[in-house]
Length: 214
Image 1: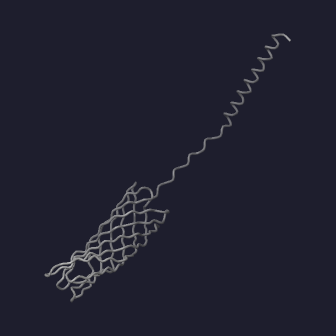
Image 2: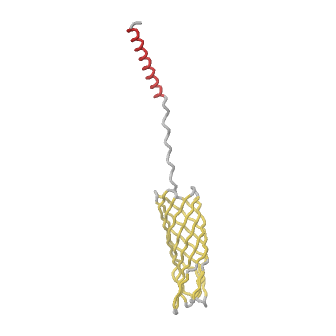
C-alpha cells in the first residue's frame, strides 16, 4: 500500500466519525425532553367568612364595695364558658370583622359591706387584626353586658349592667374550616347602688375557643 492510499483511508474515517457525531448531537437536540412545569405556589389562608364556635376559660370579677363606713374589694374567680359567632373580611393581610358572644360564670365574693355575684354575660365587639397566613393576631372592643346579684348585707338586688370591653387575642387555623383561639377581655360595668352600698364592677376573662368557618 502506498502512503497516499493510507492517508485517504484515514481522512475518510475521520470524516465518517465527524458526520456521525454531528448527527448524534442534532438527534439529541431534537429529542431533549421539555422542561418540567413549575408548580404554582400554594395560596395563603383566607380569613373571610362567617364562623361560630364555643369557648372555655376563667373569669375574675372585680367588685369594690363602699359605703359611709369604708370600702373593700373582692376579686372572686370562676370557670367561664360560652358560645360565639361572627364574620371576618380580609384585605391583603389585614382582617376586619365583628363578633358576638354569650357566656356564663359565677364568681361571688363577700365583704363587710355586702356581697357581689356575677351570672350571665355577653359582648358585641369589633375585631381588627393582622394575618400571617393561617395565624391571626387581633385586637377587639365594643359593648358588654352582665347580670349581677348584689346586696349590702340587708337589701338584695338583681340587675343587668351595660358597659364596655377591650381585649386581644390570637387565632390559628388548623384547616380551611377549623381554628383555635386564645383571648383576653376586660369589661367595665360602672357602678350600681344597692341599699347603702355602692358596687364598682368590672371583670377579666381569659379563655380558649374553637371556631368553625362556613
